[in-house]
Image 1 (tube, rainbow, N blue to C red):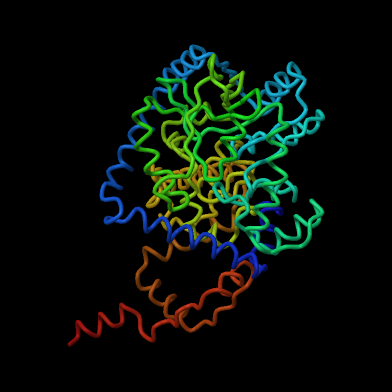
Image 2: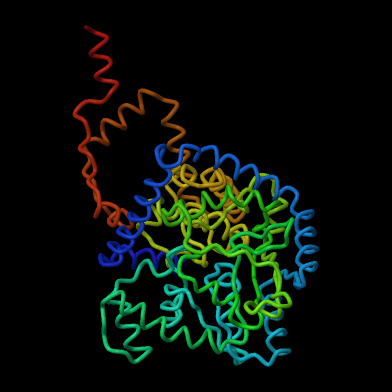
Length: 462
């Protein structure tokens, strides 16, 4: 574990206010989801998961075909497609469009893909103002922070925190009433929408047979970002493809339920090119930027490519006992929780944070709630095995290997195992190091006076 990873975890565990904020917010999202995916609310829920999984598997296995079909249809509707291998390529495309149009102000709706490439900072280095318009993202931009959660980016903040941010950054009176805070942000952002030269969005889905970009949201900011400015740029990973428009119904029934516990999000936008002659709304230019960013490398791995099935609902974060303790900013990249633990090392290499695949209890909650049935625990185990292979080559992890050798020695010697367990039951427990934080929220059960073997032997003797 790197020093930074360890430090961030320790800081989060030691902050009771932050612990309460994470537990409260994720607990609320969990309960909302449970209510809308129950047998009574959605009897076909498990069937929908199976369908979605099959669609994503088919699409990813035939991604080259569907990407070419998508490109043809975008062009046919008057749009432009840009292929980007790296974050720098994405920034170059956006900067090139901005330079051609003399743009200075960009409004941006929520997009984890643009977080991946650190787009705002790259644009600011060239004198462009890029403003987040999602309320949570806007608050974090004022704080110079990255998202804490895939769906609820400011999940870790209280209304008192937001009041101080607005007071310090916007010069407004300190106000902890959430409705007033929303009105403050709306007043600032509406001016940005009206004066923006370019609008940037992400994409929840890219539909191959129509060349359409689908965006799902609750605030309406994405709709304004994509329709008010003269230029719309949608930036998405190449894995966001689905084959047909009729496939979308399956995913829309799953996405909002898994993310926020809603049957359907408030706004669902279908964007397929610039405005047509006679239309008064919409951009005059439509661009789609398709990012590789390590995805084709993962695509080549038949064992772990199902990581690309993710629809970024965040359900695995809400149900993960590790995420709910260490929070989003403890993770080394923009993706946190179980999905971050599997895609970060695959996109950036295991050496980026070798401890990341081990930041899991392997309880299986993530796989149980994943709407597209990604077997996250299996992939974590495969990544752990790869880490161990590297450690063996580097002569690291000697203490852990020695511990497992000792366990293997005892496990095949029942009598010795029984003696060790009997001795261990008499030892006191000292919560040292990371165990101290674990025991701060839990009580270890008192060991039984007699072991199962002793009770069984007694019973057999009757």
